[in-house]
Image (cartoon, rainbow, N blue to C red; front, side, top):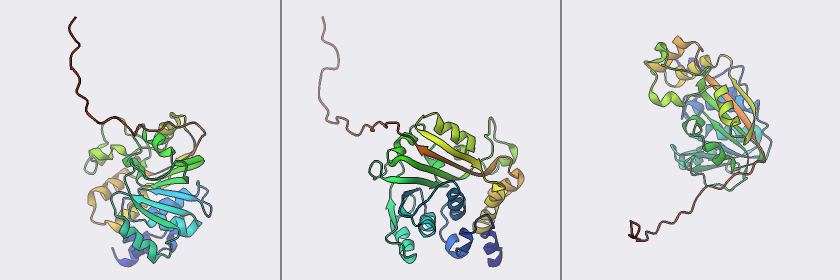
Length: 273
């Protein structure tokens, strides 16, 4: 691929905001299997980002999506990630002139250091599948979101669920960890059954598999197994998925955080007679 071809692959009429960003800056910010700016812009069609909102960008990687959301919509973003350090993100934020809007945090998605009801919105770009399939995770995360606040996810997923064996044309690429990929309707059911949220959207990107293929050609052209899987699949199973939900007023139980840890010696068996 030539540099010019890469630039073309990262420009698309469906994403006018993202297309203004330097392809070299974007590819230097790669942290996952999707164009994070495309995913963030797609999510913005169904999430009402307003200036001054507090937004948690959960699993933000190197922080490109956090910078994009802050610049494009005037929101404050807490850029949280475990796999990539906060220092790297802080340098990107500083160079973008967003020190007062984007705040990098190094943390685990299952041990978030934020106050209850702190955020107006929580978004996760191509990351939520790694922890959000846990049946208990939604209730944990919602504690950080204000009642009426929005949760939004977008990233790699399935057009339809794979029931049974993995289709033959995907087997050379598929690995067990990819079982975390799900369809939009799966996410709708997963969230709705908790009774804690109102699901406001759940859909699949039109021609999402082609955008996924463009991204791979641009940033990982030698990733033959994934590229060939996408070509063979042609959108039957693989694509980009988006889902949003509004937190209700249902009370959320506090997690158990204090358990007696001091050992006390007592008889193991009941006394005889």
